[in-house]
Length: 353
Image 1 (cartoon, rainbow, N blue to C red):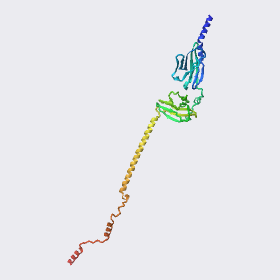
Image 2 (image 1 turned 180 degrees about the horizontal axis):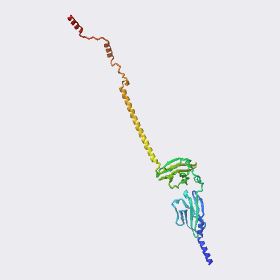
Image 3 (image 1 turned 90 degrees about the horizontal axis):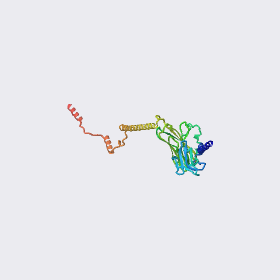
Image 4 (image 1 turned 45 degrees about the vertical axis):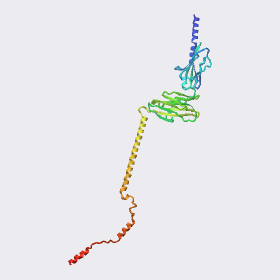
């Protein structure tokens, strides 16, 4: 009886040994550096017939890739044309990944289904083993007064705005990192643009907008329905062959119901237009008054004899002979035939005598 029980336990152990071994292997995670063309090794250590290989990303168990000896391969949309099964041996489920981004960081679970020994699993941790950037060193963020801004933008709530970090450069740009620092908080990466094997790779980590990358690696962030929480500093760090370059943009979002830039500008335009109209009217009035004053002066000159212009022809004799003749007549004695009153008087006196 005891021999039968021992054989029974041995049978149970043999049946569940591959699963226990697989469960133990799931607890182990191998670290792999995030880099272009990285290889995630999943080589089953024993011989047998491979039934299927599946890759998922934990903890959500998102499907990544599946290999079946008869039906071929299948990839998730995000990993399509980026993953390749190496198949160096019949029991090899390893994959290589290209055009990697920071979104590829995480834990990958490989499961190799074999016969007759069952499944074999492995966890691989993909990490960014490069030196952490300055913003991730745990230091306190600098105060806004210390940060030098290259551009300042003002966006009203519920409007759209595009934050561009165009950088004037003469060298070659390899990578651009777009970061955001809300007021009083630390820098956080919201987008990455880089060139990989001659192609352009864009990584968007922003939950409020859309990060766009141009062929020249000029990165921009388009925000829709702006809210006050979008305000803060935005920084673009360029990795070039001439060294690192940085461009900083300050975005200001007035609170709802407060100061409105459009209303302010409308008042400015209305005030400027009114001032210009008043100035034009004043100039016209002064010009009319000046013209009337000149006309009055001209009229006064015409009326006052002392202000009249001298007539050059007033004292010029029209005919010199007539003038000479008049002078001679003036100086010559005048003779006239008058009746002699005296003779009548004399006769009267003689009669009286």
